[in-house]
Length: 272
Image (cartoon, rainbow, N blue to C red; front, side, top):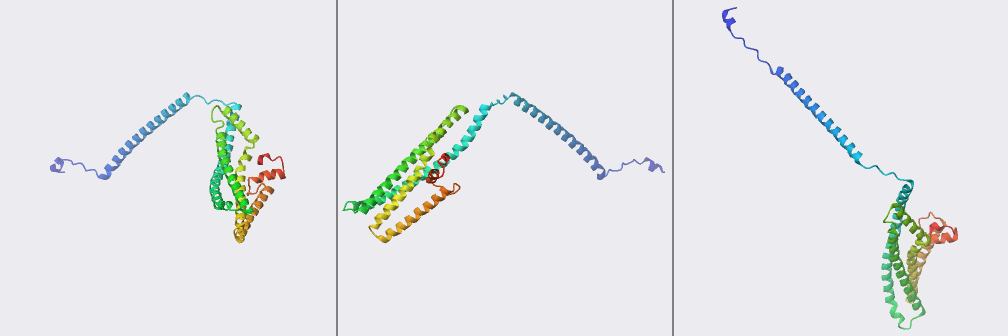
Protein backbone atom coordinates (compact mmCIF):
# COMPACT_ATOMS: atom_id res chain seq x y z
CA UNK A 1 0.00 0.00 0.00
CA UNK A 2 1.33 3.43 -0.89
CA UNK A 3 1.71 6.37 1.49
CA UNK A 4 -0.97 8.30 -0.34
CA UNK A 5 -3.44 5.56 0.27
CA UNK A 6 -2.55 5.34 3.94
CA UNK A 7 -2.89 9.05 4.56
CA UNK A 8 -6.34 9.36 2.89
CA UNK A 9 -9.13 10.02 5.40
CA UNK A 10 -11.71 7.31 6.03
CA UNK A 11 -15.21 8.32 4.85
CA UNK A 12 -18.02 6.48 6.66
CA UNK A 13 -20.50 4.69 4.52
CA UNK A 14 -23.90 6.49 4.38
CA UNK A 15 -26.86 4.57 5.89
CA UNK A 16 -29.75 3.81 3.63
CA UNK A 17 -33.38 4.79 4.25
CA UNK A 18 -34.30 1.14 4.73
CA UNK A 19 -32.02 0.98 7.77
CA UNK A 20 -33.53 4.16 9.39
CA UNK A 21 -37.23 3.33 8.99
CA UNK A 22 -37.32 0.28 11.28
CA UNK A 23 -35.67 2.27 14.05
CA UNK A 24 -38.21 5.14 13.77
CA UNK A 25 -41.16 2.75 13.65
CA UNK A 26 -40.03 0.94 16.76
CA UNK A 27 -39.71 4.25 18.65
CA UNK A 28 -43.22 5.34 17.59
CA UNK A 29 -44.71 2.02 18.56
CA UNK A 30 -43.14 2.20 22.01
CA UNK A 31 -44.46 5.75 22.45
CA UNK A 32 -47.99 4.74 21.39
CA UNK A 33 -47.88 1.74 23.70
CA UNK A 34 -46.88 3.92 26.64
CA UNK A 35 -49.67 6.41 25.91
CA UNK A 36 -52.26 3.63 25.62
CA UNK A 37 -51.16 2.20 28.95
CA UNK A 38 -51.43 5.60 30.60
CA UNK A 39 -54.92 6.20 29.21
CA UNK A 40 -56.10 2.74 30.27
CA UNK A 41 -54.82 3.31 33.79
CA UNK A 42 -56.54 6.71 33.89
CA UNK A 43 -59.86 5.25 32.68
CA UNK A 44 -59.65 2.42 35.19
CA UNK A 45 -59.06 4.89 38.03
CA UNK A 46 -62.01 7.03 36.90
CA UNK A 47 -64.29 4.01 36.77
CA UNK A 48 -63.15 2.98 40.22
CA UNK A 49 -63.85 6.47 41.56
CA UNK A 50 -67.29 6.52 39.90
CA UNK A 51 -68.14 3.17 41.44
CA UNK A 52 -67.15 4.42 44.88
CA UNK A 53 -69.23 7.59 44.46
CA UNK A 54 -72.24 5.54 43.30
CA UNK A 55 -71.97 3.24 46.30
CA UNK A 56 -71.68 6.23 48.60
CA UNK A 57 -74.83 7.80 47.13
CA UNK A 58 -76.74 4.52 47.42
CA UNK A 59 -75.65 4.28 51.03
CA UNK A 60 -77.07 7.73 51.77
CA UNK A 61 -80.52 6.83 50.41
CA UNK A 62 -83.09 5.83 53.04
CA UNK A 63 -84.09 2.18 52.93
CA UNK A 64 -87.33 1.34 51.14
CA UNK A 65 -90.20 1.01 53.60
CA UNK A 66 -91.41 -2.50 54.17
CA UNK A 67 -95.11 -2.73 53.30
CA UNK A 68 -97.33 -4.81 55.47
CA UNK A 69 -100.10 -7.04 54.15
CA UNK A 70 -102.74 -4.37 54.68
CA UNK A 71 -100.89 -1.81 52.59
CA UNK A 72 -100.18 -4.36 49.88
CA UNK A 73 -103.87 -5.27 49.78
CA UNK A 74 -105.08 -1.70 49.33
CA UNK A 75 -102.42 -0.95 46.72
CA UNK A 76 -103.50 -3.99 44.72
CA UNK A 77 -107.15 -3.08 45.22
CA UNK A 78 -106.68 0.46 43.92
CA UNK A 79 -104.75 -0.78 40.90
CA UNK A 80 -107.56 -3.13 39.87
CA UNK A 81 -110.20 -0.55 40.78
CA UNK A 82 -108.59 2.08 38.55
CA UNK A 83 -108.68 -0.31 35.58
CA UNK A 84 -112.37 -1.08 36.19
CA UNK A 85 -113.30 2.57 36.72
CA UNK A 86 -111.52 3.69 33.55
CA UNK A 87 -113.48 1.17 31.47
CA UNK A 88 -116.70 2.10 33.27
CA UNK A 89 -116.21 5.81 32.73
CA UNK A 90 -115.27 5.43 29.07
CA UNK A 91 -118.23 3.19 28.24
CA UNK A 92 -120.98 5.25 29.81
CA UNK A 93 -119.48 8.63 28.94
CA UNK A 94 -119.41 7.62 25.28
CA UNK A 95 -122.99 6.31 25.44
CA UNK A 96 -124.30 9.46 27.09
CA UNK A 97 -122.47 11.79 24.70
CA UNK A 98 -123.86 9.87 21.74
CA UNK A 99 -127.34 10.03 23.26
CA UNK A 100 -127.08 13.79 23.72
CA UNK A 101 -126.06 14.33 20.10
CA UNK A 102 -128.86 12.11 18.80
CA UNK A 103 -131.42 13.75 21.09
CA UNK A 104 -130.46 17.22 19.88
CA UNK A 105 -130.78 16.32 16.21
CA UNK A 106 -133.98 14.36 16.74
CA UNK A 107 -135.59 17.18 18.72
CA UNK A 108 -134.99 19.55 15.83
CA UNK A 109 -136.66 17.15 13.38
CA UNK A 110 -139.64 16.54 15.69
CA UNK A 111 -140.13 20.26 16.25
CA UNK A 112 -140.12 20.90 12.51
CA UNK A 113 -142.90 18.36 11.94
CA UNK A 114 -144.93 19.71 14.84
CA UNK A 115 -144.74 23.19 13.34
CA UNK A 116 -145.66 21.78 9.92
CA UNK A 117 -148.94 20.18 11.02
CA UNK A 118 -149.82 22.75 13.68
CA UNK A 119 -152.18 24.71 11.37
CA UNK A 120 -154.26 21.55 10.81
CA UNK A 121 -155.29 21.62 14.46
CA UNK A 122 -156.83 25.06 14.12
CA UNK A 123 -159.35 24.21 11.40
CA UNK A 124 -161.64 21.30 12.34
CA UNK A 125 -158.96 18.70 12.98
CA UNK A 126 -159.74 15.07 12.32
CA UNK A 127 -159.06 12.28 14.76
CA UNK A 128 -155.99 11.18 12.79
CA UNK A 129 -154.52 14.68 12.94
CA UNK A 130 -155.08 14.83 16.69
CA UNK A 131 -153.47 11.40 17.16
CA UNK A 132 -150.49 12.32 14.97
CA UNK A 133 -149.95 15.61 16.78
CA UNK A 134 -150.25 13.94 20.17
CA UNK A 135 -147.70 11.28 19.24
CA UNK A 136 -145.31 13.95 17.98
CA UNK A 137 -145.57 15.90 21.23
CA UNK A 138 -145.03 12.73 23.26
CA UNK A 139 -142.02 11.88 21.09
CA UNK A 140 -140.55 15.34 21.60
CA UNK A 141 -141.13 15.20 25.35
CA UNK A 142 -139.51 11.74 25.51
CA UNK A 143 -136.47 13.05 23.65
CA UNK A 144 -136.12 16.02 25.99
CA UNK A 145 -136.43 13.71 28.99
CA UNK A 146 -133.65 11.52 27.57
CA UNK A 147 -131.49 14.63 27.13
CA UNK A 148 -132.07 15.64 30.73
CA UNK A 149 -131.16 12.18 31.99
CA UNK A 150 -128.03 12.14 29.83
CA UNK A 151 -126.89 15.45 31.34
CA UNK A 152 -127.61 14.18 34.84
CA UNK A 153 -125.80 10.95 34.02
CA UNK A 154 -122.66 12.87 33.06
CA UNK A 155 -122.81 14.69 36.40
CA UNK A 156 -123.29 11.41 38.27
CA UNK A 157 -120.25 9.95 36.53
CA UNK A 158 -118.16 12.98 37.50
CA UNK A 159 -119.29 12.56 41.11
CA UNK A 160 -118.30 8.90 41.03
CA UNK A 161 -114.95 9.73 39.43
CA UNK A 162 -114.17 12.09 42.30
CA UNK A 163 -114.45 9.20 44.77
CA UNK A 164 -111.26 8.61 46.69
CA UNK A 165 -109.19 11.35 45.09
CA UNK A 166 -107.60 12.44 48.39
CA UNK A 167 -106.17 10.82 51.48
CA UNK A 168 -104.25 7.65 52.09
CA UNK A 169 -104.52 4.57 49.92
CA UNK A 170 -106.73 2.85 52.46
CA UNK A 171 -109.10 5.81 52.88
CA UNK A 172 -109.37 6.26 49.11
CA UNK A 173 -110.04 2.57 48.66
CA UNK A 174 -112.77 2.54 51.30
CA UNK A 175 -114.41 5.62 49.81
CA UNK A 176 -114.35 4.09 46.35
CA UNK A 177 -115.79 0.80 47.61
CA UNK A 178 -118.60 2.65 49.38
CA UNK A 179 -119.61 4.38 46.15
CA UNK A 180 -119.38 1.17 44.13
CA UNK A 181 -121.75 -0.52 46.54
CA UNK A 182 -124.05 2.47 46.13
CA UNK A 183 -124.01 2.00 42.35
CA UNK A 184 -125.21 -1.58 42.70
CA UNK A 185 -127.70 -0.79 45.43
CA UNK A 186 -129.41 2.00 43.49
CA UNK A 187 -129.20 0.25 40.08
CA UNK A 188 -127.07 3.00 38.58
CA UNK A 189 -126.33 1.08 35.37
CA UNK A 190 -130.01 0.30 34.84
CA UNK A 191 -130.90 3.98 35.25
CA UNK A 192 -128.35 5.02 32.64
CA UNK A 193 -129.74 2.42 30.23
CA UNK A 194 -133.05 4.31 30.29
CA UNK A 195 -131.53 7.05 28.10
CA UNK A 196 -131.16 4.93 24.93
CA UNK A 197 -134.52 3.26 25.65
CA UNK A 198 -136.24 6.64 25.72
CA UNK A 199 -134.60 7.63 22.45
CA UNK A 200 -135.71 4.39 20.82
CA UNK A 201 -139.24 4.93 22.09
CA UNK A 202 -139.22 8.50 20.79
CA UNK A 203 -138.16 7.29 17.35
CA UNK A 204 -140.95 4.69 17.28
CA UNK A 205 -143.54 7.30 18.30
CA UNK A 206 -142.28 9.70 15.66
CA UNK A 207 -142.50 7.17 12.82
CA UNK A 208 -145.97 6.14 14.00
CA UNK A 209 -147.14 9.75 14.06
CA UNK A 210 -145.65 10.32 10.62
CA UNK A 211 -147.49 7.29 9.24
CA UNK A 212 -150.81 8.45 10.72
CA UNK A 213 -150.39 11.98 9.39
CA UNK A 214 -149.40 10.85 5.89
CA UNK A 215 -152.44 8.56 5.80
CA UNK A 216 -154.62 11.67 5.86
CA UNK A 217 -152.72 13.10 2.88
CA UNK A 218 -151.91 10.18 0.59
CA UNK A 219 -152.43 6.49 1.28
CA UNK A 220 -149.65 5.27 -1.01
CA UNK A 221 -146.99 7.43 0.63
CA UNK A 222 -148.27 6.50 4.07
CA UNK A 223 -148.14 2.81 3.13
CA UNK A 224 -144.47 3.11 2.17
CA UNK A 225 -143.65 4.73 5.51
CA UNK A 226 -145.66 2.08 7.38
CA UNK A 227 -143.82 -0.75 5.59
CA UNK A 228 -140.42 0.78 6.28
CA UNK A 229 -141.37 1.36 9.91
CA UNK A 230 -142.56 -2.23 10.22
CA UNK A 231 -139.34 -3.56 8.69
CA UNK A 232 -137.23 -1.49 11.04
CA UNK A 233 -139.25 -2.50 14.08
CA UNK A 234 -139.20 -6.15 13.02
CA UNK A 235 -135.43 -6.09 12.57
CA UNK A 236 -135.07 -4.58 16.01
CA UNK A 237 -137.19 -7.37 17.52
CA UNK A 238 -135.08 -10.03 15.77
CA UNK A 239 -131.85 -8.51 17.10
CA UNK A 240 -133.41 -8.16 20.54
CA UNK A 241 -134.47 -11.81 20.47
CA UNK A 242 -130.97 -12.96 19.54
CA UNK A 243 -129.53 -10.97 22.44
CA UNK A 244 -132.05 -12.51 24.85
CA UNK A 245 -131.47 -16.07 23.65
CA UNK A 246 -127.68 -15.87 23.58
CA UNK A 247 -125.64 -13.67 25.95
CA UNK A 248 -122.76 -13.99 23.46
CA UNK A 249 -124.75 -12.24 20.74
CA UNK A 250 -123.05 -9.03 19.56
CA UNK A 251 -126.45 -7.37 19.05
CA UNK A 252 -126.96 -6.37 22.67
CA UNK A 253 -129.47 -3.63 23.43
CA UNK A 254 -130.36 -1.89 26.71
CA UNK A 255 -133.61 -3.87 26.86
CA UNK A 256 -132.03 -7.29 26.32
CA UNK A 257 -130.50 -7.82 29.80
CA UNK A 258 -133.73 -6.78 31.50
CA UNK A 259 -135.84 -9.18 29.46
CA UNK A 260 -133.28 -11.97 29.80
CA UNK A 261 -133.31 -11.56 33.56
CA UNK A 262 -137.11 -11.61 33.68
CA UNK A 263 -137.46 -14.60 31.35
CA UNK A 264 -134.58 -16.92 32.23
CA UNK A 265 -132.92 -16.13 35.52
CA UNK A 266 -134.20 -13.62 38.08
CA UNK A 267 -130.80 -13.75 39.81
CA UNK A 268 -128.80 -12.21 36.95
CA UNK A 269 -128.08 -8.99 38.80
CA UNK A 270 -124.76 -8.57 37.08
CA UNK A 271 -126.43 -8.13 33.70
CA UNK A 272 -128.53 -5.16 34.76
